[in-house]
Image 1 (cartoon, rainbow, N blue to C red):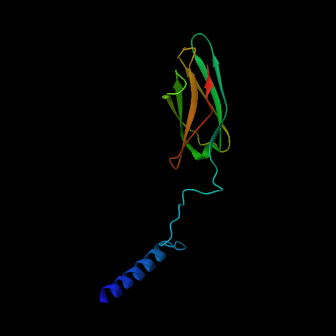
Image 2 (cartoon, rainbow, N blue to C red):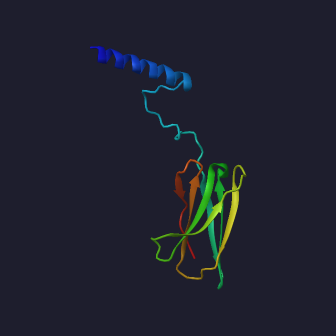
Image 3 (cartoon, rainbow, N blue to C red):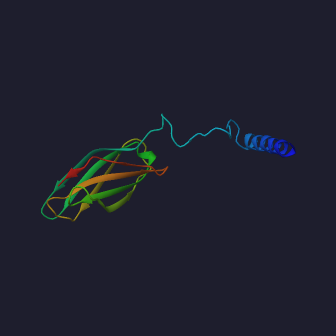
Length: 131
């Protein structure tokens, strides 16, 4: 009986300590504060690929740029297996920001996509464009 009573007292003390350290947070409920229905997500718009005999020029814009941390430009020769060819750190611009990359790859069957890694560590991908 004493064991249950002491356990109850410890739980109350822990709850009070957590409540003082984190006001408004109930320690006995699970809540993921990293996801929110209203949190903006960065997204790639207008990914374009222009090619010449010597290089491939890629241009795109990122909406909600302030949420993005870095971009990875990925290339595929077979259309399904992508490898990172460039890591681009985002600007501090808010709203929409423009980006470009010049690839010296001249393979006619190359496909590209942009991987966005946001400041919370989650990733999203753009649509795929082909050379």
